[in-house]
Length: 485
Image (cartoon, rainbow, N blue to C red; front, side):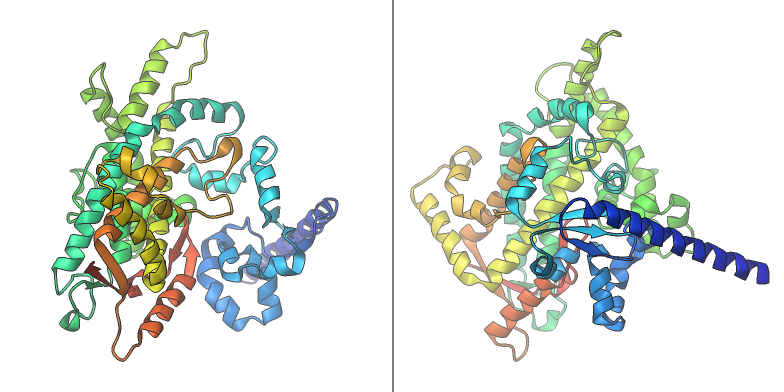
C-alpha cells in the first residue's frame, strides 16, 4: 500500500511539474504575439477535463471562489455563451488563452475572424476537433490542403437546386404534420399536466422540431422518408439501433462517443443510456456500409440519382472507374464515404434543428416579430404565388432574416459551409409553413401573467450549453400554446 501511495504521489507531482513547465513555455510563446494574454491553469487537452468539466461547471461555479472560477472558466467548453462579452470587455476583442495544453486565440472582431477564415492553409484545425468530427473517417470538415480540395470538388456540386427543392417540400410536409398534431389533440402526449392541458398546449415543441430536422435529413440525404407522427424507427435485424437512432445517440453524446472505448460504454455495469452510446458507435459503421452496399446493388447504372447519398456514391464510383493506375482521381474511399455521411448528418441536422428551436421560442416570447414575418407571408400568399420552392423561397426575405447573424455563422472564405443553402431553405420552409397558418405564445401556468411566461422562456433559452451546437438544457420546460390564426 505504501508503494502505491508513493507511486501515486510521484505521478501527481510529475504531472504538476510538467504542467507548470508547459504553462511557462506557452506563456512565452503567447507574449511574442503581442495579443493580450489570459493565463489558465486548466489543461484543455486533458481527457478527464474534456469529459467532466462541463458537467462539473455548476459545482465549480458554486464552491470555488469567484476569482478562481473566473480564471478557469474560459477552459470549459461553451464558456463564450455563458460569459457573453465579459472577458473581451477586460482584455479586448482578441486575446490568447494560455494553458498547459495549448494556446488558443479567441476573436470577437469580425474583420480579424474573416481574415483568419480566408487563410485556410495558415490556420489548421485543432487535432482534438478533427478527432471528434472525424470519428468515423476523413471528411470535408477535417480535411486540409489538397485533400480538402479533392473532397470539396466532389461534394459541393451535389448540394444543388434539386436538393434544395426536395428540402423545401419535405420541410413543409413535416412542419404541417407537427402543427396539425399539436392543435388537433386536447391532451397532447407532450404535455405533462394533461388533466388541464388546453387545446394546442404542449411541452414537446423542441422535440418535435428536432424530429422535423432528422426526418428531412433522412428523406433528402438517404431516401428514407418518414412521417413526423412515426418517429420511433425500428432497428433492422442484427442491430440494436436504427441508422438514424444511432446518429442521434452519437450527436447527443459526441465527446464520450469519441474518447471512451466501446468496451467500457457497452459494459453491463453501465446504465442503459451509456450502453446505448456504445452500441451506436459500434453499429454506425456497419449501418453505413450496409447503406452503401444496398445503394450500389439497387441504383441503376445510369439516370438521375435519388438522394444525396446515391448521388455521392454514383459520382464517386464513376470517378473511381475513370481513374487509371497512373492518375489520382477525385473519388472517395469507403472510409471517406462513411466519414462524410456522418458529417452530412450531424451538420445538416443538429445546427438547423437547434436554430429553428431557438427561433420558435424567441418568436413565442416576442410576438411583435411573429407579426413581422406573418405580414410578409400573407403578402406572398395574397399575390397568389405558386406554392413551390422556386417561387416562394426568394420572396420570404424576412423569414430568412430570422436566421441571419452578423458574425459568420457558416464560416467564410474557401471553407464556408457548402450546406448553407440547404439549411436556409429548410429554415424558411418551416417558418413559412408554421406561421402562415398558426401562431404561438407561451402557455400560462397557474397564476402566471403573460409577461412572467415570456420571462420563463427567456430564462430557459439563457440556460443553454453547446454540445455539437448550442442547445437548451431543459427543452421539456418550454411550454407553448399553438393556435390557428
